[in-house]
Image 1 (cartoon, rainbow, N blue to C red):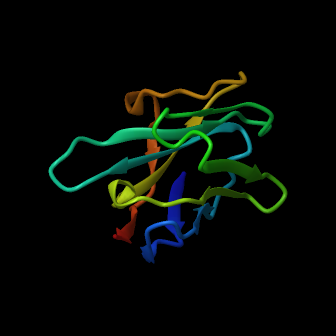
Image 2: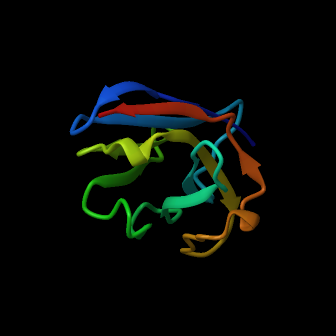
Length: 125
């Protein structure tokens, strides 16, 4: 599965962005999906994950209450709605997919075999 992330950009602190992720030439409705981010000089970190059906989600504490992960399996697309953005949210955001038969939403990036190319989010103060 090849993933394509989009929707990044420059936004002022307090603003909003919506990231999208879609597979090219395939579907990911049998996959758990996740968003990760990597800030300059830092390791990649978990942001949010959603189960196959979309019925279960998980968030990093740093984004809980501000970000919302969702998926539309009919449109074969995953989203990350980011509100109340802070300068510390500045990073390259990656989407990832893990094939599974269960309602998983892994936090460990090593569990995801498929990754998108990343989209840059810059939050100015």
